[in-house]
Image (cartoon, rainbow, N blue to C red):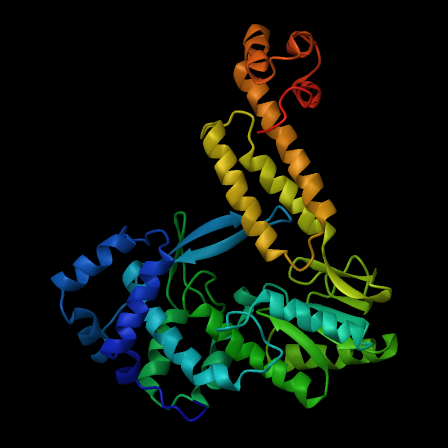
Length: 409
C-alpha cells in the first residue's frame, strides 16, 4: 500500500462511499448544525442521487460549519468536540478510509492508537515488556493541546509527499479550515484538528508517525497511543538526554509544544500513568516482575462516574439505574482487565451495593415504609427491621445497617 495512489476518483468510488456510509451509520452520533440525523442520510441520498459525488468531482462541495460541544475531562476542565453534519461525516469517512489504506502499513510498530487490529491493551503489554527488559526510566511526554496545535501548512506538506492528486489535498484543506460554531461565535480555524471528526485520528497519526520514525532511527523503545507517548530508557541520564533532544525535534520539526509541567522524566513509579494504567513490581509465582495495575486516578475517576450514575434522586428509576451501573462497570472492567485484582472489584461492588441501598432508603422516605419493605425482604428479623427503619442515623449510615437486612440488590 506504500505506493498506492490516492485520487479523488478512488476515494469517492461507489465501493468506498458505501463503506464510509455504513461506518457513519454504525457510529451513530448526534446531528450536526443542519439537524439531519443518521437515520435520515439514506433517504437523503435516494432523494438526491449523485449530488454528493457530482459536487465533490466538480470541486464545488462545501462543508457545513461544525457544531462544537463540550464534554467534561477528568481534571474538571472541558474538552471541545466537533460534530460535523452527517453528510460531511460521510465525506470525511471516505477520505479517512483511503488514508488508512495508504498509510497504515508504513506506520511504526510502536503506534497503537486508532489503528485496525491494535488496542490500548497491546500498548500496555508492550510497555510492560520494555520495563521487564530493564528499561525502567521513562519519559512520559505530554504534548500540549495536541489536536488544537497541529499546523495545517505542515500537515498538508507531509501529505503532499505521498498524495499527488492536488484535488485531494485541496479537499483536506477545506476540512481543516471548516468553520466552527461555538454557541453564538463563528470560529475560522488557522490550526488544529477537530476532535470527533472522522478524519482527525488518521491525520494525527500521519503527523506523529514522524516522531515515531525519529525515535526508531535513534534506537529508542517507545509506545504511542494517539498523542499519549512514553519513551523507555535504562538510566536517568539517558532519559534526560533523550528528553532534551527529542523536545527540540518535536518543537522545531513538528511545530508542536511540549507541556514541560506535565511531562515526567524519571524512574517508573506508581504516579506514572499510561492509558489509565500504572505499573508496579509484583511477586507472582515466586518471581518479581512489572505488571500493569489500575492507576489510582482511574480508580478515583471510577468512583466519581459511579456517583453521577447512582444519583440518590434516581431520575431513571432504581431498576434502570442498576442496569446502567452494571453496563458501565462491565465496560470499565473490560478496559482495565489487565490490571484489575479481585480486591479492586470486591471493594467497588461492595461500595455500589451500599449506594443502591441508600437509594432505596431515600425512595422509601417514611420510616413506616422502610419498616414494611424491610420486613418483606427479611421475615426472620422483624426487630432488626424496626430498629434500622426508625434509626435517627443519616441515609449513608442507615444503608450500612441495612446490609444486615438487604442481602442482595
